[in-house]
Image (cartoon, rainbow, N blue to C red):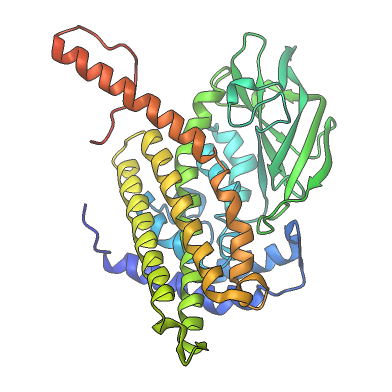
Length: 408
């Protein structure tokens, strides 16, 4: 890998950094925010500013009005946007919209793209991804999917309940995962104002950075025309991986920006705050924490760039994105946790942005699969690969199981 940035990417990085500093961070204390994220009015203003700066929806294809960034280019730009918790909203790269845009570009029909995707790329609409369910439905184990869809003439009728659906309130459309009568899963596109969709409530969560919060949705005989099936019937689980592998990685990119922000605040505080006759930065314990932060930030960035490079080479990247998600979520969390410790009382108040980052980031170790699930999946694939290699050495023909190639 070549880690040097070409001049045009450096220029885009610097442009994004300046935009966030001058146009986004000043709005962080805007009153048009609640525990469930920025209001639609604030989101519209942020989007308008990014549009005027030529930075709106940079990950979308040029045909749709985006910049068509590669995964490595996204790693650079998304980190800069993530330096403020409002930055991803401004650039229209926040979750779940970023992942939904990627999925629709890959799977949707031309008619579906014009109806749902193009307005979203333009920043005019938001979306949600309805997969997670209350027990005993699907959570970290998608095979437990309980929401059902049955064919009725030219429509599918969907019944079920979803929760922790990020961005549900105010979303214009939803991607709904439902189980078919044969046990397979299918994705459906639906406008959120259709009869049969009810937003029961918003869940109170630790984070408050996602527009629309996290909703509980109920589907009561929701009728979706067969033309609004996303992709092929029965391929929902496969499409979930198309969406989730890069979406895990873009989470890592955005939160890296937040962790870097916390480190910058902690360094500045340690330089000016004195204790026991000298600046905090001169105390060995504080210096060690700052050094550990730097190493964790660097480790996270290397994992992001490496996995992004693999995706740009056409690798499926599910194993690598799981590994990056665990490494980055835990490394970036350690950074912010140490920053709270360095700031002391200032770290547990809203006097600095670090407490807000701390509260927003904790859930990152759970979003898109908790660390334990990714570790379990990785371990299983490592063992399967070892068995396959052992069989090959003994001359056993064929493979015991179909697994993606691992980077060794």
